[in-house]
Length: 479
Image (cartoon, rainbow, N blue to C red; front, side, top):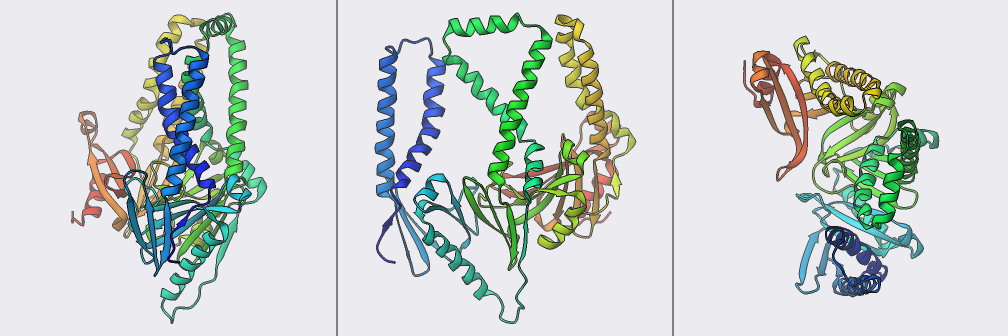
């Protein structure tokens, strides 16, 4: 193709939604919440302001669509964009590592797809090199197939073809994964944040009436309401995870991993094994008790539906712990975890207990003062915090196996990370006065670090000699 092409007109809607999300909910709501006592002219003037914003956003979205053109010619993708400042970008097919295709509800109605082009270098902000928000579904998969064929041609001729390995998740397993996810806590935090801002718009008489009614309720009734609310949020988070990861499939072919999932929005992601910096096996408290874990890949560059700062990609939503070894052997055979050879010294245990008990003790002071009748709750919290501290202490350890380092630790969830020395971007050791008295040190190693952005794993309060051994192993120093 040599003639410039525009995206489908549905891209105007996508641009509009993106603009509203970035500007309206961030700026407009913040402004109204800050200046809620300022007279803006009454309801009709506020309606006028909102209407003008919507009209302006629609005009900008239309101009963005009109000024965005792309063309594919001579193994290159050329893109021009920008309303006032014209930007030109050329991406060679030789640099493209993956073409990720996703289909939302609107995409499916018009038989469209969203294409994200991932290149070799990636980006510091973990964004795709180029995004085509609305092109025909046939064209999107044609490009993806073209890249796959190109990679197959580049392989050595004498290399034997590899058998494709595919693994999917069953519906009962997915429901178990959704109902035991720790995403409930994140969802609760978002609801609390939105709720705190939404309260700014509630009329003062209604707000004061509801607040007064809640103050008159007894503590047991408040606890019941809290439990009902928590169950509602848990159900909502469960439904969201189930919708997001329905039909989850991972496929390995030609040293690359292809992932697809989604009920309402279908996502097709491609991950080169060369971009994997570490593999982590995570066990939430409930999942660990049930004997399950999830597997994540820490990657460098590209978005790939990443979490945790843009570096972590979910390889499989839920596996039995007995299945993890065979799963890794099939899809990432180099990253096999091993039995921990070194654990924390006994003198570290009191430090782990102190870290989790100290916040509870601080919270206990106002509770004992204002609600002494319910001091029994503190006993439960102290017991739970003590158990967490013990688990954190027992689950920490490491193993050195040649050029491979396996680190195990726990915050709330247990995490076992497998990484190679050549993939570790930096390794630091530190101590403070209290640690020095006990001959203890803390080790932190970072992977997938580009421009200072990456994932860091810590091994806290380890024996000084053990930490020094790890530092010497990384820096190739002899004892």
